[in-house]
Image 1 (cartoon, rainbow, N blue to C red):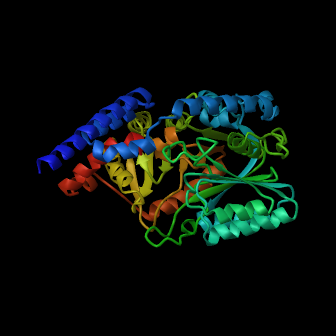
Image 2 (tube, rainbow, N blue to C red; image 1 turned 60 degrees about the vertical axis):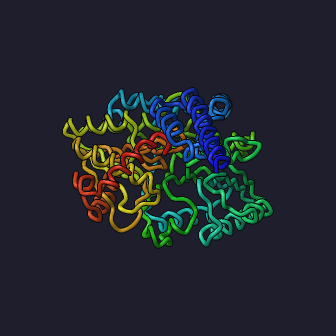
Image 3 (cartoon, rainbow, N blue to C red; image 1 turned 30 degrees about the vertical axis):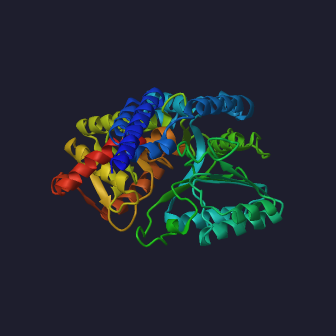
Length: 482
């Protein structure tokens, strides 16, 4: 008995020693103080539960990865980005009139891309409309098709996409297919092998290009991009899986939004893919870059700016984008997101907007897909309501769309959630469109969503059992790494 207790005591001591070592590592290498504190406290206090997750979620390889990625992006932009972007002036025109000179300057510097006029953007509500439009565009392709998704499943929808791409490849259309190695971890080898056998260039996106690092699950490429012939592009929240069509009973019907973009902004979306492809393959895809100066006459079309973001950015692009969008609002800022885990900067901007008298609304799901995130979101929702922010929960099914509406003048749609993972750990893309007609279209879409939602108050927190309120606080401790 003493022998067994000795072994148990030794194992406990070893776990705490390793926890202290890992906590020191987290303090040295975690990018934010909040994240460092969250990891350090949990590793010291509960090493039995947090040591293994830290192996997967810790940032052991971040510095070298970020430096390499940033250097390659800067080199690629010097060599391959459309030269027309350098000559474009984003200091005037409709965006400045609607949002203001300072907002336009900050967004163009933040995203590294200009506001471009002459675009047409339309919303694609839910999976049926999104994939019908994508498949129609692929069917009409003459030169090349770009496909990039975070999640690709070999289910009925995935097979439809594979068949459509193979059919176009057989016609001589060049196909480039990029998927995230973590998000699509269960994509079978037979699926990608069939694509390659059909002449399609297929590559996974991974932190380490030589092999998929199973001990590093951060830095996911969360972008969803489809571009056809440089003429139209699709960006939004949908991945490739039948659940995005509403065929996943616990969460269905699935609520999501994509957009279709036509015009010179397609060149920017396509270039974001080129950066990711170059990282994954060390090659630049062989297709024509659509000219950014082929715009409709002045005053026609919509003004768009593409905001790509990622963990290798010099600035925290995604978080700052949300801060600037919230600060730009004079009348209202409406945000829909599946996960409400804002950082301090975004949360402060939301509270200040409410204090200014701005109509601040956030639409979040009523159902959960990640229990820890959901519980942490409840506490953030309670704090937001206390500050005057209106929080709504979508009733019918799981809400997955990522949409921002600024006053009646601009709206952004893309892949970024209102959480730390999107702010600092994932590669994301948002497309901001400055156009009153498009903003009205987004407003009407969101009004229908609000009609299917209920507004919460402080009772959601206070009427919860005591053990659940404790669980919310514990879950929020992990918010910097959720």
